[in-house]
Image 1 (cartoon, rainbow, N blue to C red):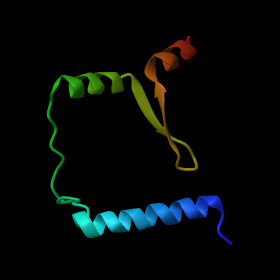
Image 2 (image 1 turned 30 degrees about the vertical axis):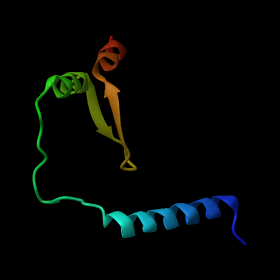
Image 3 (image 1 turned 120 degrees about the horizontal axis):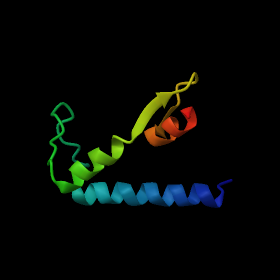
Image 4 (image 1 turned 60 degrees about the vertical axis):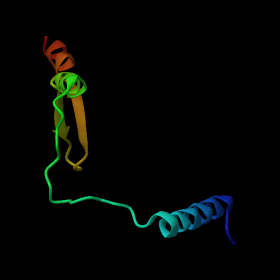
Length: 76
């Protein structure tokens, strides 16, 4: 017996199958080519914001980030 969630997924999968028949398969590009960075104002702003965070990994392998300013405040 299909639940309403199963019916929804089934409809979505049929729709994507029809799209593929009409438009062709998705173009994933060359997966081995390097990422091209624009070095525009938006990217510069994002890079600056990310400098305020430090990435950590816990014992279970989960990744998380902490704001560097909060770490300094905790040490005081």
